[in-house]
Length: 253
Image 1 (cartoon, rainbow, N blue to C red):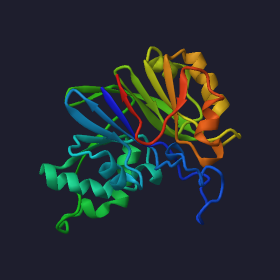
Image 2 (cartoon, rainbow, N blue to C red):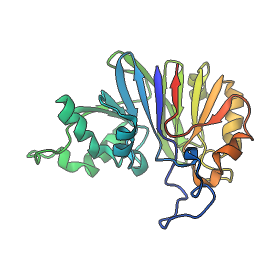
Image 3 (cartoon, helix red, strand yellow):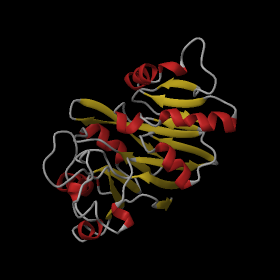
Image 4 (cartoon, rainbow, N blue to C red):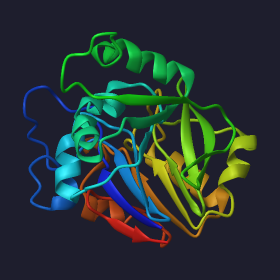
């Protein structure tokens, strides 16, 4: 399995006007983060989890030429807003793009991208093939995805385990039952917004506590705001089995 981090950042905490903090002024490319998304290549198939506002830029930067399906964690705009740009894959692959998400996510997609579902569609609009998923394992082209339900304040969000790889974004609570699905993972990717308490995201200390409890071999932190601090400095605070992810990081499992 090959995992490419397309984006590891968040809109949370970023001002509308350009920010002048140390992270935003940093010359370290690891501090330059697009919205969170990941590209998974497994068994000759290509999948992306979430299509945030930076989706087009991420696809071009990573040179993604084929895309077999998109899997969604939840319906917030920073994870869905770039979906329209899957139309390029419709054209290249000459087929509808399969989308997988829970019913609430698919309903929001139907609403926000209504023009893709109209009876008389304008030429060139994206074409989707919607698949409703629940909190049970499902298969896409021979690859098994196991949902892990987490809470993003009061919104249920799906993380996913694919083989020995577990990916969780936008969370501040994971039940004991759902934690059991994570145990045994070689790699855990986990939401970590900032160091200060937050309503709907794990803080750095909370994420590290959970990682230690789950006893995973390697963990990477994602969905980081500029409030977390400089990549180089924060990494010095982490235990040996935990690292900050960064845009363009590639893992081979």
